[in-house]
Image (cartoon, rainbow, N blue to C red; front, top):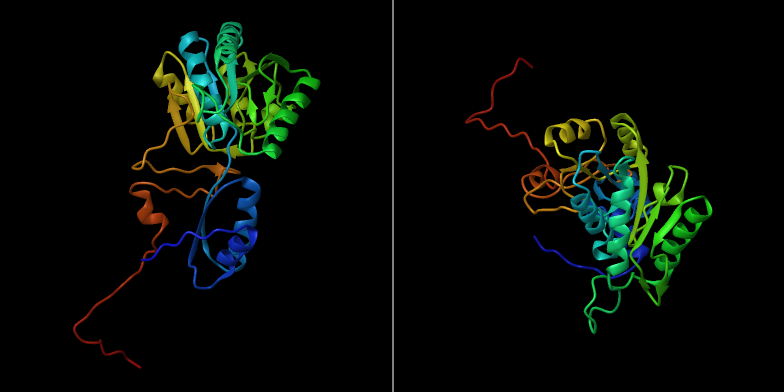
Length: 284
């Protein structure tokens, strides 16, 4: 088998989706682009594997260790400047623990150094381009205008966006609904397990889910009621291993799984073969 890496834009992608010599398309990227890939490949009856975006919830229950919860929320929200499909996109905290967790998260954000990692000792580097930076900032500003409170960050220099914490975030706000792909931790509170499940499920995405709690069994029971391709009990949302089947549901993907033994199913097709020494004699 020969693998080639082709440069190019939408024209190259469209050619791959349309060319009859390409039997399958495996795409990793935004949900918007994934829909276009699926549409074109579908018209040509190609098999498609889609690994798309995420708005991944972290649920912090009232019995969690607040410091550990804040540590996980910070790592999940800001690693790689939030530019990863598995980033923690919604921090859902029980109202009893929310003030402490949010304060700790705010302190961490204010201590994080942002800059050019090639010449500075920093924790966060740049966003990918100016257009993405402006989009991140517009989500933050629109959410503040809708009632969210800026606890830390919300500022930038060149392409370097500060680690940001928003609290009082509600489901009607962009910070709750849209994949930000930037170093922003939107905090939403809940009062009960049922409300936490409803908030976590209130999204078109379904990639990664995190639940921070003192009882793993309780966390696992909750996770079974929330759509997600990846589940992490007592860990943040970013987790990937070559041997583990990876993928999401809903707007996060088409249910495909790749990685480890899942590759056999995803990138091959079943074939039924019969073999006999002589052909049988039939009535006709």
